[in-house]
Image (cartoon, rainbow, N blue to C red; front, side, top):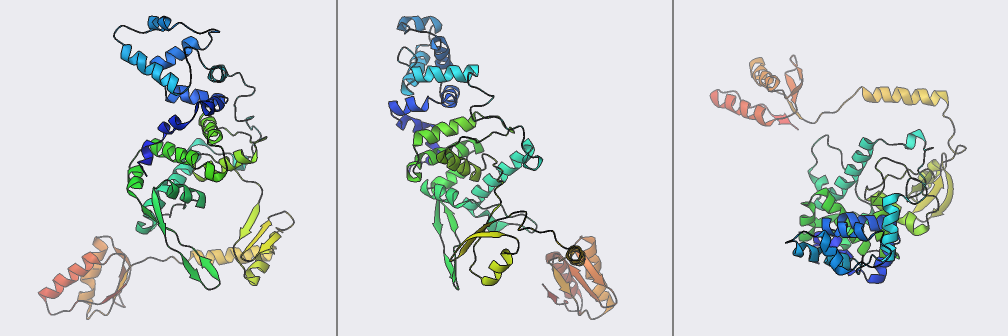
Length: 405
């Protein structure tokens, strides 16, 4: 496959004239093409012709072009004809939609539907939260491509892995190759490992804006396999790109295809879609686990390795006070202990042999715990302490103390 990162906006050139006319029925699509694909001179030509009821003579356009700019004029006309915007007169579909987009001619403050002012407080998100959510999703996608989870440092949080849809999209675009499955008992566990391809490596090195649009146009190209019209998908993407950041929009009146596209955009981290259906899915065939789940979930269906249900007010009863107290005590007991990875050093021959490395470990900041009367201490790192003890052993008869990770 040729460089997918270079096929983003250029894939529009594959559309036929009829498909462009269908695309231009959506004001957001006309506005997106106008903003992103036209030169300044081409935009000027569009604005000149936008409210003209009749065709404009070709020589009249020359009045708006500076001398010596014939090359820019020809390129502007080439772009307008390539995107089926005009043939010495703006195409009706493009002109109508662009007028609506520029003047706000549709009802409401958004083409997406009425803005939701009654959103619950728990579902509202600040712009910074939306940015963190999108960045986490996107870093999870890029991290999956390069297997960044294999090089996590202690204390680092594992990024959220991409959904099956996103993985299939990356694979279909030739950005990754997938390997690895495993079975255990009666349950089949699939462990997917991604290997980044040459095109995928070039993709990862691009800026986020280029990566995003490249992946979105891969999504448009895969619309046929998803039983969707590529023009409808492209029009919907232009529609979403025209929305205001941080504003909640209603999805009332959306058909099944549009809701599916919203789900896909959520999995890419482009939108945040609060879910309030309280559906519950558990992949298990254990009678004990199913019985436990049935205590707080109203089970609606059961399959060989899957049960589905819903959380309701009646299925979730209030915990007795004694149970709450027990949970609180258990949490307090659990918080009393913390674990620290490191090395324990002991069995020193005498006090001086113990004190020298212990003091050195404290000075370099790796000493975690010590017991002077038992002549043992615990360190978080061993390399420098080991070298210090080796130097001390070479200067005298004392032997290096053993250590255990």
